[in-house]
Amino acid sequence: MRLRNIPGANDVIASSPYVIQEPIDKKGNQKENFPKNQPIHIEIGMGKGKFIHELAKRNPEINYIGIERYSSVLLRAIQKMEEEPLENLKFMCIDAKEITDVFDTEEVDKIYLNFSDPWPKDRHAKRRLPSKEFLLRYDKILKKDGKLEFKTDNKGLFDFALEELPVANWKAEAVSYDLHNDEKMCQGNIMTEYEEKFSSKGNPIYKYIIYR
Ligand code: SAM
Image (cartoon, rainbow, N blue to C red):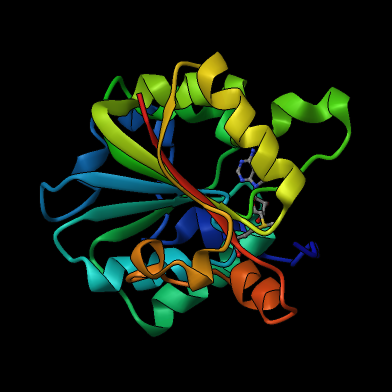
């Protein structure tokens, strides 16, 4: 994700009705951010929010929270909401490391990770969003029967993510090494910004669905 420091982004975020302000104070009560009491699904590292916006539009019976740590990127998701507001979508501007500070035990029903940053150096492995360190965090906030879906075009990151599963006591329910040619797993697939970019270059898309 190309990052530019957009002047005023922090002010827009601090006053946006689409952003959950002081999310730590709402730990355990995130559903109160929405008019309807419905299951909560989250996307971590949502970027400009194309995927989660479309997902929320298609599934009004779910409440969605998109998480992005950079204000300049989150701003784009806010702009999309201003053009097409949805009552079942909100955002948080936090680092995913803080995920257990903002969600209580089993407060989340489903987690999406899309095209997470690969952090190629070994010494940065624990920063990767599908690492065992993050899986342990997700384990705390996700309902016992909840699932996590991860897509990427990065084979190295995908192999790493699969290797981390047994270490953190997660299991794969479904795995695809070529999502766009996998009729079953691709059903209802919503393309993310990165997915559009990399699949148009001919890269296969990898996906897993995991549970504990
Ligand atoms: N999910 C989008 C897509 O598929 O088009 C964006 C992918 S982009 C490669 C990864 C995004 O995750 C970036 O916007 C980055 O800022 C965000 N991100 C990476 N690590 C994060 C973290 N620890 N907490 C929150 N957001 C993070």
